[in-house]
Length: 226
Image (cartoon, rainbow, N blue to C red; front, side, top):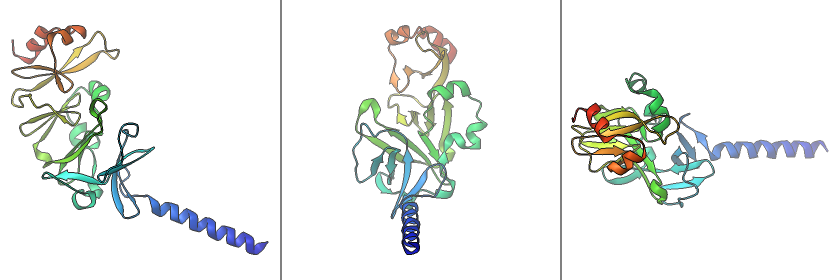
């Protein structure tokens, strides 16, 4: 009986040790290691996406094993600085940013913008149910400007929650908090540049603005276009 107990205890210890080796947390926020693979764990996507050579799925979310850098998909461990990798919203730059934090809480997907000691990164998944993931290095963080409500500028590009707004003019783009009659939490972030008004990452027609109870004239006045 004693021998059996010892054997049982031995196998239990081995089993627990093996389980710990399967997934090791290297960065308490994001970066993990499973077997020989390093990955960044993001929430969501499991009901839409399918495993690829760039990521695999689990009930916990999307396990990114590669990131785009200079137009190529590269291994996470070759690009990311694990010790400093974090959500941009956890940085001092974000905390000291004079933006509407209540508006940001409702509309900013905190997974969209990430940073380490070298780079700023964007992540976007499953836009309108598509089986697609975008996770890439934008470049040096000194060229990144977070505007609030999920909107950000990087050099000459404008982004909403990690998705580029192709038609937006970065030189004149602003974010204005506007009350929406159909949004229960009140304010909604509206983007505006010299040419267009935007809801989320899309150009907003006057009909769509009216549906939200938003007057295009008010938006243009607040932005200085009128």
